Length: 93
Image (cartoon, rainbow, N blue to C red):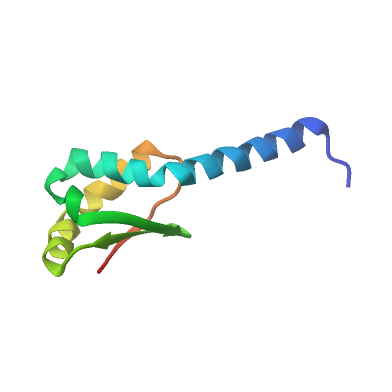
């Protein structure tokens, strides 16, 4: 199969940009939380993105309950700040 150079460059650039966005997710989480619910900032930490699910570590169950209330808005804001697909947020202890 023959591929032209322009398509190879586009594909590599896309992979590079996606990797860069993944590296920026912890900062995106902090910015988003600061906008939506800044009181919870000290109680959370970005852990991972697996598939389309964002995993966030939370200090205790009280914060988990509080963040669950804001989950829909957090997902919407995260989607606005990145082209990475985030369909779910899971809060873990």
